[in-house]
Length: 325
Ligand SMILES: [Zn+2]
Image (cartoon, helix red, strand yellow):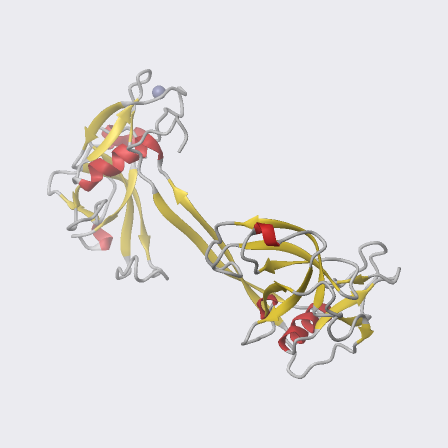
């Protein structure tokens, strides 16, 4: 934690994850299909080098590459880095070395993990062999990892012999999961806002210069560029400044299991100079209107109002909220 971070600022893990589906060309398809059968394929370039992992186009001439060759399952470490704290979904759960391995018969190196008891057991130039995964399905993870082997162990299997690249039921596509896994902090201003909301109070912060009250607060006035640190409790009631009728059901049913149509509105809470968003309930959707007076409805343990419902007061005059529409 840096010295500028207040110790009472909220923090929470945040994961953004989505699957990325890609199709494979003939070369990548042959490479992954081969792994399933413990066969490692490279591709020969116009200058007769063998690239592993293979690429579809020559990095020098840009010509299409199709000449596949099989290389060995043993190789030489060309460089490495120790990983003392493996993260979820990395090849090994225990500390390991990331290694670049030039397989026998190849001219380039493949990035993978080396299972070794400690960094003192790893060195550039050491001989290693592939440890195959027990279940192989046509993915780079079919190579579980590399493991050290004796310096005089002869190269296993073939080294750079021609291969037609044909396999039964070849792999034609892969799903690669993109994942960002980090700790999110909302900052000091929103931490104060969230703490108050946990007590069912809505607070904003006032700009010392223009006197506007921002809800939710961002910690600074976007107009004056100065820090806002005067806490101001706003609401609880407010005025609908504008709204829309939602007719499409959310795909995130667990989060928003709400019958359509419903109304989502901009609501200017009393004392706030910025409207926030909220769902309007307790009134038929086609009777919601600009100027409608509403109040928040909290659920047990909720950190924000579940929705806003009419207070029964007369509608607000347009001039009282026209600057907030
Ligand atoms: Zn200001």
